[in-house]
Length: 84
Image 1 (cartoon, rainbow, N blue to C red):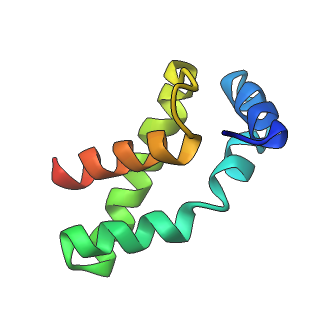
Image 2: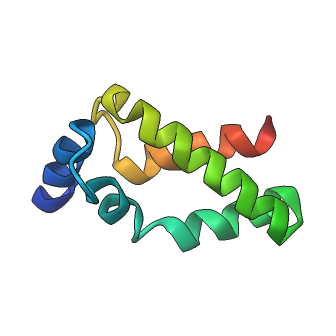
Image 3: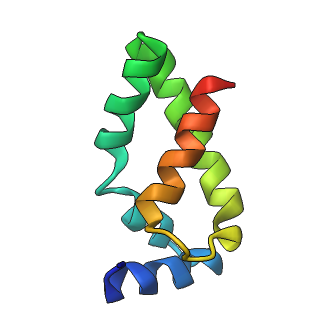
């Protein structure tokens, strides 16, 4: 279950409010990076994949339905990006 603060940040991020998406992403960035490194086996490539995943998530935040945790949704985007 997402916290009230996370829900608030998701709502603000959907409306492109300044900094909301960055705040939403901050707790998960390093964790995602570590997972991506395990998939692509190269830190430089992992950084590129992470940036692409973040961009995809930012562009698609309005598609987040809240059926799962935000991290689960973000993780799936990162995983799909790494495997592409």
